[in-house]
Image (tube, rainbow, N blue to C red; front, top):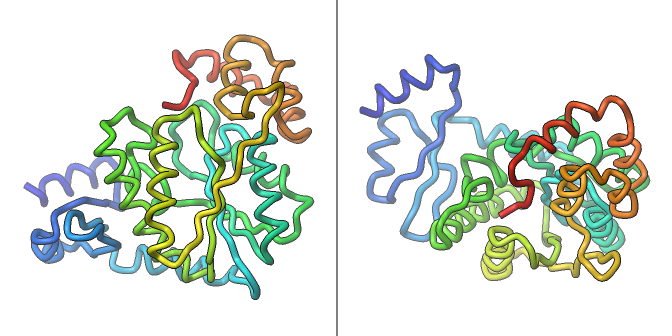
Length: 271
């Protein structure tokens, strides 16, 4: 059955495969060419079909390691707002280096290439920021599918635990000792993920720095609010919520297809 499924994925052009299994089944899948990346206690093992896949990813990250105190920020930046910038600037002020991971997953109306460019342009004034693509190993469809789906809370927590177990193996490659995250009140799945981070990261030797959200007009600045305004045709309303670089992008003709994609979405609020 597994061999057949692998053949089907190969026919679809999917060469890099991931799977979850129970610890007692890991050896079986190891015999079929899968290699362990991480595990969550005695409940879940995460594997891939490339012997050097995760190792190569970590080796590439190590090339960007810097001396001194290092922190991490992980964001979707869908799009990059003043709230995101507030979080990054705080991390940058308190650390010698900040490794900023932008989610590579194409799961929304704003393409990854656009999100990554807005992050890099919006943080260009901070010399100690190192931007990375998250790849398939940080909050991806492989490590944390619940981030992109409306799953039950128990499933969300299990996926969050797995994603953090993988991050716990990535952090030493960059000497990361703290991870900065914005306080979450609106998104249910992100709030659950934050709670898992607060509980699990210290067990991995990583401080979890939860930063209060930047507010505007008494409400937290969020990407969901920005997307909703664009969706409703209120483009001017996003101006006080985003950096100048993000505003210029969305106020330009090149943003036409992205704006159209946002307006065609039935629901732009992150679950």
